[in-house]
Length: 296
Image (tube, rainbow, N blue to C red; front, top):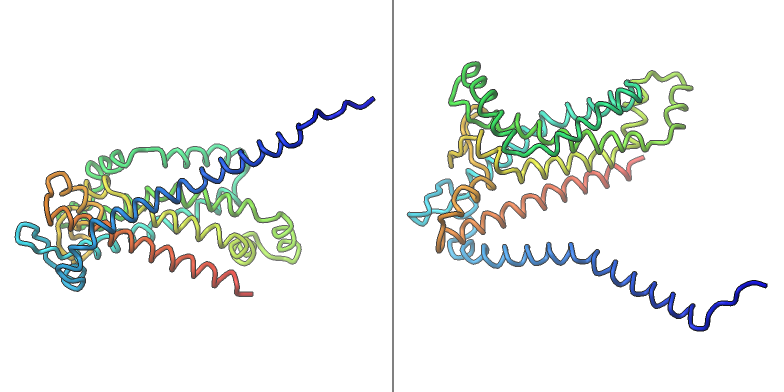
């Protein structure tokens, strides 16, 4: 004889199920709540001084002298964009090339050995990257190309290396997620391995690859310690790749410890500008990705 269900057992299971769903919903929205709190706090602290002095003078001003009430962020904005662009120029080709080799032109044994090592690079503290840059890269740039060595180029190289694990790991996973039938069909039609990668695998894995670039870009824009150590931290618009530069994150980290009054408000406003830049870059990248996915 089959065992009979206990009276009220079904109601208890439904109640427990609702409680679990509610708990998971609370956990899911907690991250959104934290982001909302951070956004409201930064905007509330930073926007008043921006409107007090005017957005144009604040964003387009070229002089940053807080003691003289000059809060021009243009040199730091240009510096952040220049360093991020340089990091992407270095990191994206290297990262995608490594992902292609690991996915299509290496054995499972080699991939199983190299991929974990690449992922370990993400766990190295940024100060270690900065230290290696100061000891090795900066003297090399100074002796080879001239200038102080602490420059846009040094920061771009260091950040380009730092974003490699993100780009490689996500790109490898995206390429491996492409159905094997895509590869087999392309090769059966007479395409070479490289033609298969270029014409079949890349379009199929495009969204994941773009996501890896977006995450790498976010890492480069938000990096602080390594940039402080190798960029030179001069609050001036860089005239070349060999000129020193200060980024928005470096500006906040260098001066927040002693800033008071309007100086402190200006640093919060720097955070607002940084937040907006990251949002704009991500929106452009996501819009580009969506547009390409709609194309036949």
